[in-house]
Image 1 (cartoon, rainbow, N blue to C red):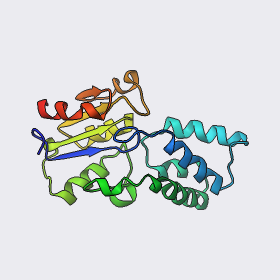
Image 2: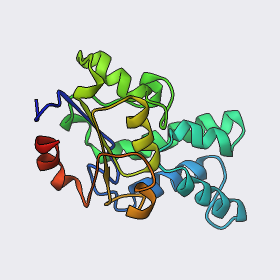
Image 3: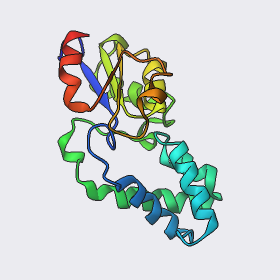
Image 4: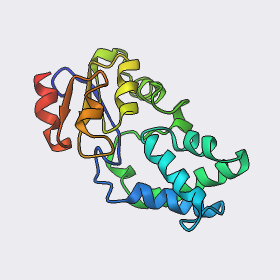
Length: 181
């Protein structure tokens, strides 16, 4: 327990770990697997869409961009490229939309974590993320705290428009917020 929270659900890239371009590199690699390279006009279009949908399930992003068979291949290639970060051994539970249902902004991953970890009260859950869809998922799950982190994809002006409990500069400021919320 941290303060009144039994569970803290954190987005990874941009929130918990510094991205340093890992997500962009994984998207570039995934798009290359289906024949879309940076030299092509459709690459710029795809990249724009990827940035607009930061926080969405990558499977949903690729499904919106590509035919079904290409979307499946690109999703697998993205996951393979992103797994090199090696962070999965540092957390109690890691979920993706494939594990829990719909991706953000739906609350499925949060609700799935609650179920798997035996936390029945959404008021005992804090959700932390760097995108609008992260905060929307927390609100949809009725989390006790929804905290935006400004070190990632979306800036303060963007996150301030979405229901939240607090906005912090980076994850290092999280513990005092959880203790006092």
